[in-house]
Length: 451
Ligand SMILES: [Zn+2]
Ligand SMILES: [Zn+2]
Image (cartoon, rainbow, N blue to C red):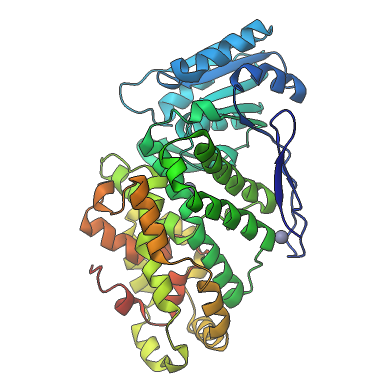
């Protein structure tokens, strides 16, 4: 039983062997994902195969239009399609905000049958929300291997400067032209690698959720992500050189991470505490009018930050835990509410508390978790032992020239320290950070991050 990835003669990715006994319902991905050379001219053929229609709006920005949008537009027109162009012009990097979304919406006509997004995260999400609201299928032509959101069903957007997440549709067709992706600037490549390296932490946390809280862990999804991230680590030099081989490995890792979301219908295999920290940095920087750090690069830095805590926890002797001492450290309901509103500020703090009521833990439940952790210490150690050495990740990121510290991401000590403390509170999803807190060890583990 093992998932295998192959390509057919048309460069279409096929993933086989996703059946497993984990108990979760597995959905077979139905999207057409193409990875290979010279694919831009083949977009019309892919659209016909899928029967999406003949009238489209092509969305790009002033960077991606000359880079790839123009060629896709030409290919579509020559093949007899009717194309309405929506090129979003910005002096700085384009944001997926109400203005950009509005430009796409006003370009859509009654006869429009599908949308084509030519770009990476921002363009894809701007198109995704319009496709969702107008109930149109869309095609994603990726221009950078910078994040795993091509296959996502959530659109992170900006509304009046505030980060929001809206449910969205997945593109029916995803086209990743490797020659084009090789031209992506190195910081975008570093971002993609950071997003992938975070999967190690996501997997460890998922296993802990399964050991402590009876969550279902899917071996196949775990394996898909592990294989992808290991292959990526073995090819860091190729990726740094942005060779076709290296970039292909990177985009495959990003796409396959996304495929696990489609298979099990949630992001458990690909996002955990490292993403919480990255989201927090982004949310707070936006809230305070600062430029938000790149998503994947933040995930990479956060992965390095949390890693030593995972390694250290594996060496603990949990039998020595003292329930009375733990109880002394518990926050009351009011204290926790106050903490949430301090860490996340009013609006986000209230939303997070409303959406994660179970995170106000009863003492009985906390005792249950501590006792379970004590009884299953060997399983916890085994799960944590699956992580490669920290040095391997650090060296890979160094070799790549990726950011290593929060400071390089524009995150000051105050924001960094807060993020390490509230990473466990961002959502109910179980993490080692929650376990550390439940075992009364947070103060000790986070003493280098004073509040
Ligand atoms: Zn991510
Ligand atoms: Zn499964």
